[in-house]
Image (cartoon, rainbow, N blue to C red; front, side, top):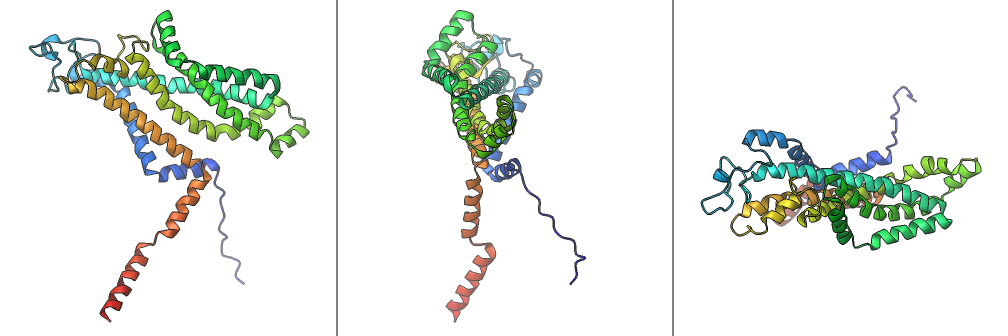
Length: 328
């Protein structure tokens, strides 16, 4: 018996590599990543758009940006996507508005994720009075009329980007904490947690070493779904004048300014609305794709569909046999 042939090594794939492979196989998720990347490039290159057009985001050009009747000028060689009600470049302001929307969405989600994970882990793992206090605190935050409270805070302290990020993160972290709490309550009953306790591991070490790594998948999925909510929340607050500073370009503020011109200046409303819709839709599709990628049942469903779907060769063979049978 010839034993000189090399043996094939079987490599074990980690859950992250499997999830990444499933995500790559999801066409909609890949398209959504492309859209998000384009939006980020559009936001990062805002100064370049200002240089190419020769317009800044705060300068007004009443002579060329407004027509004879004082209405916003439409798309032209000077204003590629038209002008707004006071003669400012819509394209440049939309690019700077993309910076605000993406910054607020990502920063608020990061803050909400951090405090939500910390609160959820402490509540679910410690139990007892700590769980009772933290869980009731989550319920209180979730019961707030967040829009009214955000407006009151903005009126009291003044609208600004940092304040908007903090307000959005405050009202979002409770949703993250509640999901994390449920996951931790299930994880702490596992055998490896009991084994760690029997070996003398301390409670902080168990939470950091044994519990947190098992929360990466659900936290990643939920965080990807919270980003579009934060972007929409910021746009809503800016639309109502309670978000960022009105002098700072934002998609919500542009929508507020354009609501009186939707019949005479369609570009004024369409540009920020289209960008906001495309960004939030892409993040939602990506969140669904990430959720499916971390679900092992997704791969089984795909394999089942592939096994049920006949190959091209089988179809061709079946067609040839049917033709011969018809001729015979």
